[in-house]
Image: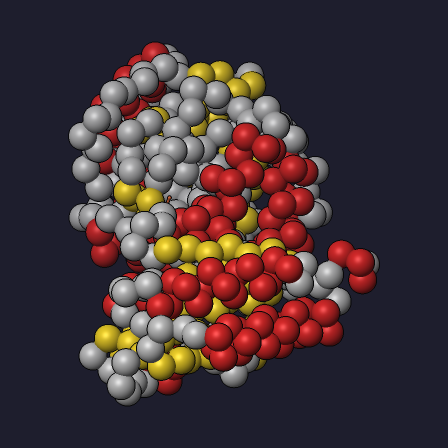
Length: 408
Ligand code: FEO
């Protein structure tokens, strides 16, 4: 990914604890990651140096457009020799500077797992003799600093792993527990500062792998973690905060919420959404409507993390759903939220297959489909009544699932 246009650089290595430095790069201005993920708060690419009495390791590199920052930070930290470059994750925002790092530090060996080596080989021409392949839970002694490699596949690629620094109880967690947040703060001071960016990151990147995330959290529960150093965003000195948030997000618990991704062309579907929203609120259900012509899709991903129900609302265009609704359904299906119920609503003029089309797109979701509400033309009084019954249906299901506060 190219450096964002308004990028201005922050060059400074920062000490985390004795022998451990942050040497990454911050991009405050990035607004779209991987030409896909909105990043309204920028991001950082965290790289770390661990210095033992005998050896020095760099953990991950940075997005290649920012590699000058990495090298300047290494210089500033006084790093003239690297024995190892640990690659926890092959994606280019962390591995992209690796070829240049290996040129500048010809003695350095790449420490990673077999799968990651294979993935790196798809991206770069790296000499096989530069690799030291590790197994799950293998350790590397730097001299008073012991790195242990913990395989953690599917956070969010198949080759991902964590690096655990035993003596300092630091977990270098790659993308896991991270957040796209460009901030001058090295550490999270309060979870509220990071909660939304972290939930956004979970929703966009980690949610499709919820069962894997759950098992990794269980594995990590056996470690006395004092600090989490992710690859994006500030570091966690109170790791229980972010670990607790993740445990909540991966759990099977859903909230008494209805998310409504909607689009309207002539106002009929929007009117339906307005009445539906009002009716749900009156029944004690939280509603999160998203006008798909305006919304930041990351906000939709956040809402999908724990809502009980998603109702897609769209007019019929050329016999099918509006393209914006198709995109929202496609993204929802790809992100695989733990949604219990899905449904559809909207207006059509003469004929259409909107509901069937969207239902097919959503084939990965393990959600029950509530009978949709599709009307002909602009909503009128009999339609208002039907919308009320639709809201009743959802409310009844939420109550049956024990989602109302007065049931707890
Ligand atoms: Fe931050 Fe999956 O790379």
